[in-house]
Image (cartoon, rainbow, N blue to C red; front, side, top):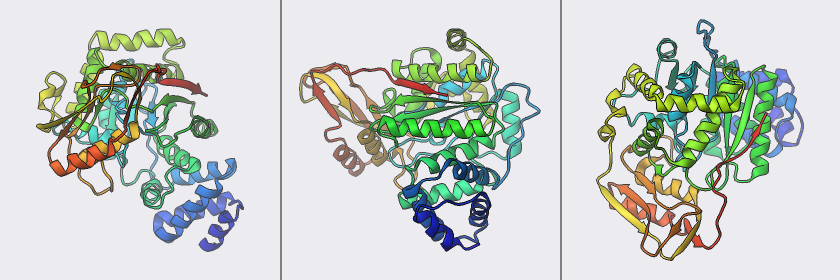
Length: 433
């Protein structure tokens, strides 16, 4: 086959057949198709899209580019959750121990932060000693022992996605519905799941900033799951403002522990509970949503979710004392407070601006090779619907270097808006099956 001919055909609005897509993805994985050729194809897909047959073939080719995990020896229903990314989105960290405490097995493969969005792996690695790079045997053993595992994608699991995602990030083709959908689902289908729940973020801090595009992505992913006989549910949640109060790696672990102790912020608890209910219902562990919610709340009240989290921390090399003493987590010792310039009600707390500011402090990556500082970050004190007076704190920034603080403050200009309107504070928008 001729790579240039395939690129030109897709560029001009034509279609690729299954054999051509299999060859393209396989050849790219092996190196026979170059990065610059695949970059051109990614842009062609970004501009022209993939029809349902092409998308199914593209996802399958990605899925079969490497290993497929086998958890058939684990009797518990296997379920995973994926978020499309946001600011302050630490939902996975309290959610997974909660659902695992209800008898589910959660083989969670997570990612790192890049740009204004945080990454679950970076947050977990702020726990002293916690290892997210596990061999397949270690991954299997932790899942068997703890009922959950939270680790990164191995070298042999969907290698086509590893290469293509890095390429998309460098070529402006990340926000493409078919490329996002196939990237997510190729990894999740490789886990051998019984069900999948997707958190599609929509709003100022999300990759999908309008509801129609978010709904299209959700419907596309649900369709891929259905095609591969994996029951898939998508929940659309708001990402106009950061989720919870903390944006930063160690501080988001602290806030996650607060959820597991029963005193987390309302918006974070709302989204965590909504996704947990879907996971219990999708696997058939609970048929009734109200009963599912009651069961999840019980894991908090009786301490089993916190105990489960401590077990997986220890199993992955981390210090389990953190669940009782979060002071062992890093925290930058310099702080700067942003104060309200007016009296009124907060009508906007711009998630993307706050995420970019946290990245500039060192909590995130502008480039994939950047180093994360787990102790820096932003505590958001004032969120939409909250009344403030002149001089009230809007946010506290924790930083180490004055130059980075200056960069962060520049990105926070007009991040908050004070007015008279009372915005809707609900975070769960709708569910799609």
